[in-house]
Image (cartoon, rainbow, N blue to C red; front, top):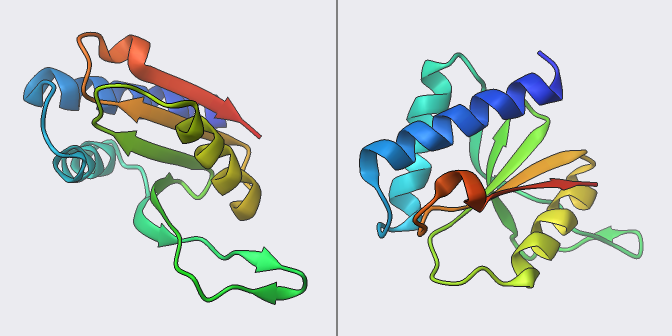
Length: 123
């Protein structure tokens, strides 16, 4: 599958989770439901993956975890917040750089329109 096909499937899974659960739940609930939906679509999903942080020739011991990585190429960061902050997209871009990945999706489930609450970030 191409990255565009994978992100298309992810967006469909996000929509199904939102349509079933609606807004206002905890991020962890959406994460679990989304993992289920993605696996049902035959996609490989890694959850709460550690992100190595290189710094001046060393790898920092501080743990940093991204929410989901799909098919080892698309990072998905989930939110369930009243207001999206610009730092969230910057955080995802940092994850993309650290993991040497090209595409990520930032999703806020606490919304009236889930389709407008999915942001594609490209490294």
